[in-house]
Length: 178
Image: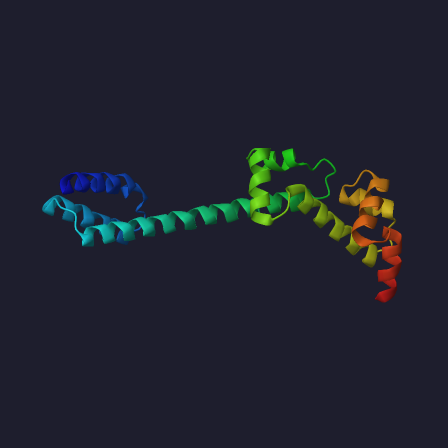
C-alpha cells in the first residue's frame, strides 16, 4: 500500500540522514521527511526528491572515499621514496610503515597505480641507477649499494633484460651522448 511505501521511504531517509554532511543536503532531507509526515503519502515529487538526495549523498561519499584513497596513495609513495635505498624495503615493511595490511596494500596499490608495489619500487630504483650511470663516475657496485641493491649479478641481468644492454654499456652510450 501507499502508506507502507511511505514508511519504507521514511525509514530509508532516517537511515541515511547521518550521511547528509552539508547543510543543503540536510535541509533537503528534512523537507522530504516533513512532506512524508504531513501528507503521509508518496507521490512522484517525493520519489524524485528521494532519488536526487540519495544520488547527492552517494556522490558526496564517493568524493570522500576518493580523497581518502589519494591521501593513502600519497602516504605510500612518500614512505617508498623515504626508504627507497633501504635494501630491506619490502611489501611488508611498506604496509607496516603505512599502517595497513600487506594484502590490502597489494590490492590497493595495483588498483590505483596499475602495477604492483614492488614493480613500482623497482622502477624508481632503476631510474635512479640510470640517472647515476649517466651523471656520475661512481662504480656500479657503489651505485647499487646506495640504491639498496644487494645482488649485483642479479641486477645486471634485470637491467640487461629491461634496457637491452649492460649497465656499463648503458653508461658509455649515454655519457658520450651528453
